Image (cartoon, rainbow over all chains, first blue to last red; front, side, top):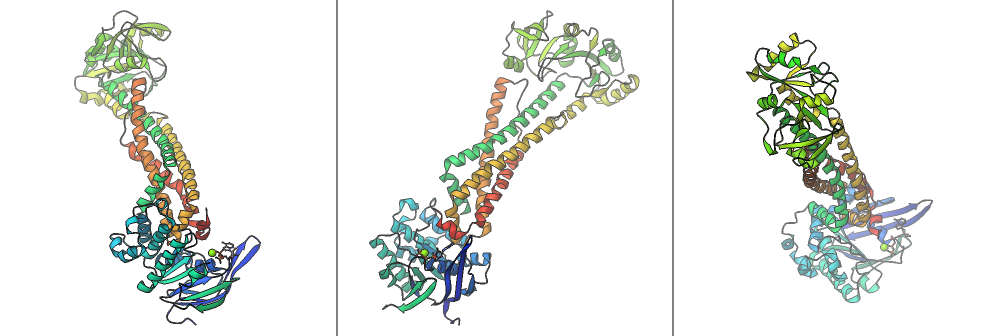
Length: 233
Length: 364
Ligand SMILES: Nc1ncnc2c1ncn2[C@@H]1O[C@H](COP(=O)(O)OP(=O)(O)OP(=O)(O)O)[C@@H](O)[C@H]1O
Ligand SMILES: [Mg+2]
């Protein structure tokens, strides 16, 4: 059952994609409990349904069946507008491809996120001082994405994701497009954000070393969770 | 922030923005130019009819205030009308259309000068010989006429005797007797202008004329002044309506295509905004705001360009196509452009709203 301190509760989650006559069963009965403040790694081969799980938990697409409760919001019962609200207030995404708005500076990317979340962006640099300091991008805010390195772009994306103070951060292969040094920096950052600010983080990764940064590692295969284990940390 | 998003989008694709703005400006300029010419023409007509100095206008049976009938008035009516109570002076004129919107007016120089206060000569001398004509400065500029120069009209060569200040009945004047002869209408005039001892008596005098000269229409000149408006010029109103319709269609189409392309190009960005929780209203608002912005730019540019067409008209055809700047039409032309732009963006906006965020994010 829904354990009281779970911020994410997933029960018998199924997702079927129908494209024409072919239907793909991307998730076949996933069960998952994530307590608030956890840093959870998700690994598994390509096509095992990792991103699909994120998209449903983050309200980008509806589940086919099953129960999904995120931050007290029953996502499985929510409609389009309900899922938009979830994205607006409860969860933030960080993607492999950074996905910054290319025409806007780093600062305006962050301000756009605040604006959409219905928060004032006045003086956000003071409010977010800790995060910006931790991410080391305070001096790069006036640059557009094209003027930033991949590592910097991903750090801006993380700042943008966290600016709205989401309950959950969903990072889908955040280091997938970064070199080793930048990957390490981002992973360290995620760990710091988790330990210092208590940020709940779910991270998909293909890298086994990266997965070790989480408290637990969930292993997916063919749309199911086949193994869950705690890391040494 | 919405403004910033929109602004950065239009700034990021300057060519698309410029092209859209230019294409929206087109119909705005077209509307303002045509309305400007209509108003300029009417204002000029008003000014010229007031410049005659008459209080009552008397015409041949079947004529209306704005149009002539084929019939003419016998010369001797001028004398009869001059003898009526309150009438100080009566003078006939002959109207001969010389193509386009232009007419040559035959006048009895002494009588006409007495009523109107006389021409103000810029150059040359009053009507003298039978071939002499007077033209006003606008007509002289339009037809590049000089003193002593030749002017061909009504199948005959005229000589420009004088160039006068505009504002008195017409742009081109000849001796009345010469025109009557030429039109085969000796002893007849097209209309009679009447001056009274008291302009306020005009309605009273007109009423008396109606009884005495049954079938002959007469109007106080003040009626002509108030009747001279764009709405009363036949076809002009319809014409302007058609142009406005073209403007709406054009603006709608331009913005539809432009925003449709923009939505496709920005599929990924829209997906990003949605992943951050942007609502349907927010996404639609962005698209509509951008269209509004393009419409606003097009309106501003269109207004600017209407000054250019004005200066072109005043250089090329000041007499036939005097273009006024009609401020009252700025908001109308603007509403047409921006309304069409925003309407044109509704469908592209709906496409953006309906886009699946996951597919949009996967879009390259
Ligand atoms: N929008 C979609 N339409 C149809 N099928 C889809 C769609 N998205 C995912 N799938 C299918 O669902 C399955 C799971 O895809 P998903 O993207 O969740 O895998 P993944 O574990 O994230 O893989 P990767 O490691 O390559 O990112 C795959 O077979 C995929 O082809
Ligand atoms: Mg994936």
